[in-house]
Length: 181
Image (cartoon, rainbow, N blue to C red; front, top):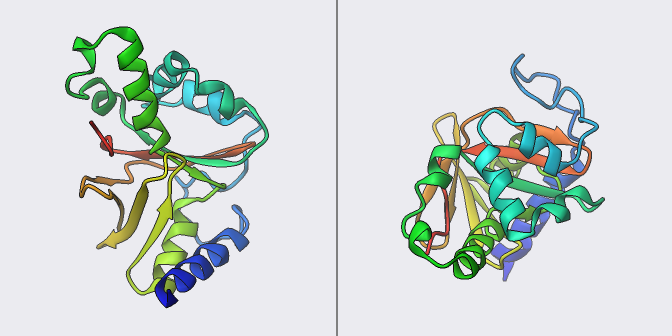
């Protein structure tokens, strides 16, 4: 129980830090300003998030990211989404249901930058767990200077690019799909 309380406090601490508050970030960091476009538009316009955007459209989840609620989207690379085993062989209805379940596991409530998560990890002395919109858990930790995320099945991805701050959340590029069937 104590560990859960500490995790919540660390997450609340991370959420209390405004997205632009870190002034010691490198020049390639996206937290300099929040974009005017929504998460849906940011994903569609991203360098390596087109497959994620298309998958959200196919499953009907994209419209959620045009609203005002804040989310953090862990966006797998185009290649990793295209490589999800077995989806191409399924009937479209089944494929969309499975894909929607996978995508919900890549969405976190609230707008969290990698720096927010790293601050929470520091407070936690090593890792922090956050529940996804699909009711799974993602565990964030640092491996050297790299932020990693591991699902509750043990699959791990690494943050692979600068975050994109949208008007209603944050897109964090990752190098792998988590929570696969």
